[in-house]
Image (cartoon, rainbow, N blue to C red):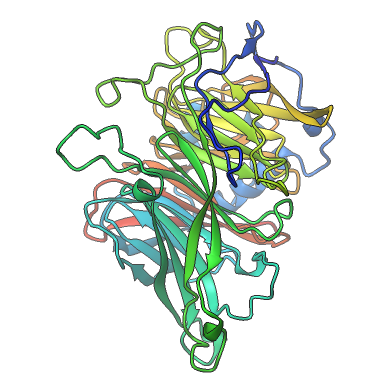
Length: 522
């Protein structure tokens, strides 16, 4: 069940060996493929030994929170098409209304679960109070109304890494946003009142980074007299890893690049905390740290390469539609327009000599012709579990592929060995694109949530093997509301969690809502 074995690759010149970072320019990747007529039916060993609560128990907790009744075996065994007929409107549903006037593309809970940030087609970022689902702030400073806001992500202020104490910090919250203009921004939420419990926050943009300028991108339109096409940012994630000490990084993905930026304070010695600036935001800067650049794979091998192309991409150029870092495994995954998922090990990202990236790359791709009568389609999203050994990739044709990634060390090098363990091929409307997956459900994350343009949120056994034609249950079915984004509160050990959904299309009288669902484990 291992459709792709991996060779170590090296960056193609030119690059400066004395540079503090190495830009990978991969023009050809040799992939050794094995015959894979069917998906491995061997259960993931990690999941075989997983203790209770099992997947059915976790799915029942979700079902009880959404519909007021536990999941039954008879419901679990029914075809996916029957699930939606039995599901009524979720009783734990709350709406954040009166805000956005366009589709919501990004959504994220603050680390403490107190606030929810949303990014929208209407070129605004909005902050909602989770407990009351009320709008508390609208961020527009410096945002160009011609470009959509696509992603938002929060930094854990309490987890800031620094070789020195952060005595100058006055921020209560730090939020990143990114949009279709190729600009990433940092927003500081800082206290303005004497009583911290009142939560009176002012928001200010404290840093702006233009990918077009910083990376000298021409958007493929350098010969035109028109304004060049801006690089749209489709992935945004803060990296605060114990494996990368004294580094606070921001991951972004635009065009064919995944970039890492160092987040640093911008202050003079005289700017340190005083009574006069105690309630002022901390100015910051984003400094280039390193990047990964992907290119088309040599099509002479057996690896399936989706020719994305079409009128919008006649040159079949590579685009990164999603990227995510796993702190547990130090692996970065990138979901690409060519139908492949690229995995890069950053196990030696921070080198005492040159901060070089470990050029060990793994290409995940199913064999050509695996999906009879249809192209596999480009990848829209990916998601790591908390161990960094399980990965879910979403395909535009409406399928989810589950992988395991094993790292083995040999002669001081890390080698990546992937296995495809399952394909989730039901639940959602056939042919409708999926836009995300997320592991959840207990300490062993036995549930995988998936969502897409059909407006459905489905719950699967995350340790499925082989072909799976039906989810354990369908939690949400929204009419005329494609779901593009989802987040779950990350409070470890909490008995109550929240799930937030964003998407929609046309704004009605009350605008495009975001949805919050309360989940109780009691």
